[in-house]
Image (cartoon, rainbow, N blue to C red; front, side, top):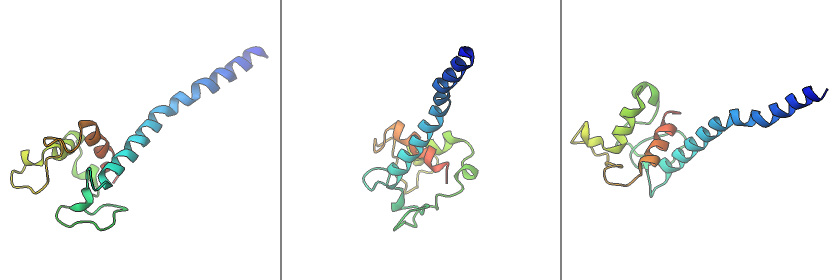
Length: 116
């Protein structure tokens, strides 16, 4: 009887740890969305159309099907960090190179964009 109770208690104590990574990932995605929509931070809406975005710009391509367009997250991150590396004539600002966003903030934006 006590052995079964111990197993049940142990399972209840351990079970939440299985969900922590998923909860942390969900947080990073939400923070990435907030950065993307923040007019003083990422401000993606100034140039791009996005899901849930109001008053979206039409300068850049719509941010949709991002996994298909950027199968490698590192390429998407590099694009946000400094788009002039791939296209010197781009109008996209180099968010990382100009320290408009931190590396961690760019990582969060990438996680969010991968949900689109």
